[in-house]
Image (cartoon, rainbow, N blue to C red; front, side, top):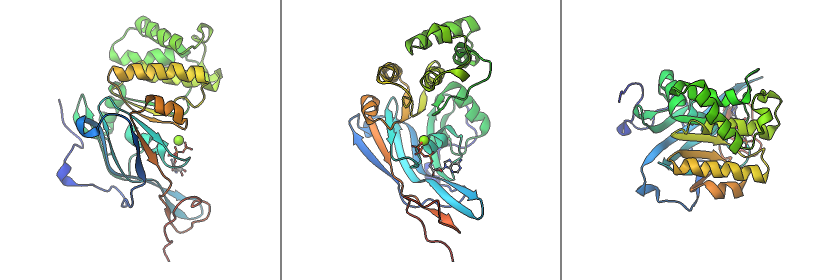
Length: 289
Ligand SMILES: Nc1ncnc2c1ncn2[C@@H]1O[C@H](COP(=O)(O)OP(=O)(O)OP(=O)(O)O)[C@@H](O)[C@H]1O
Ligand SMILES: [Mg+2]
């Protein structure tokens, strides 16, 4: 197993890329699952902060996450909840490295590289991890123009060595399980309903059976029957060893799949030269004189 880039050095302490994290904003929620101490952690966040410098008329620093630490055990499903704007999507984007954290570490126990700090791993490693180990379902499907639904799903298997006919066969199996009707398999998802697009998006993530799967409101556009089908597949891939972190507004769905729950709060504040318009509902830091 090769090592390179940014690896675990617990003695090194938290390293800030820009700025400093301040108070903890997450409260561990109910724990109906296994004792974390008894299971091996696959993901471990240490004092993760993500802030944005926003400049319109003046520059302000907005905190999406502040000094957030938690661990996820191998094979666990961690549910994330909290009010709109609490930083839930930003958290998944930091783990998937769509966003680079401002500060802190995100240790991931990779099959290919061993311990990797996703906060600072080189882009090349992140590309390999996304292709082979870490899946992400965004809130919305990024539609590729003029590509049929079946190919949008099947293409995920091609880098793993599947032939196109075999990949398409597996994609059709999954689309069928997610109740996408056959007449839509060869149509482009651009014209699909929100719920149909969401299921194609889920099929793209489920088909590779990733080691770590990040789900951003995976059932938000689905009716209760469709939610049931998705929950069934989530449980199945969990049984096969996939670790998951999933955001849910629907507490009932979360309770059906999550072993543990992390609740994010909006207590993060912003700083800069102007508070108006950004501080509603937040704990705003005093403005510098
Ligand atoms: N790229 C960005 N640039 C600037 N601010 C951002 C960016 N991404 C997120 N934010 C800000 O970070 C905060 C948290 O956003 P985030 O999308 O993570 O919230 P959320 O908890 O997922 O909300 P929701 O439940 O509505 O999806 C928001 O105030 C948002 O405006
Ligand atoms: Mg969100």
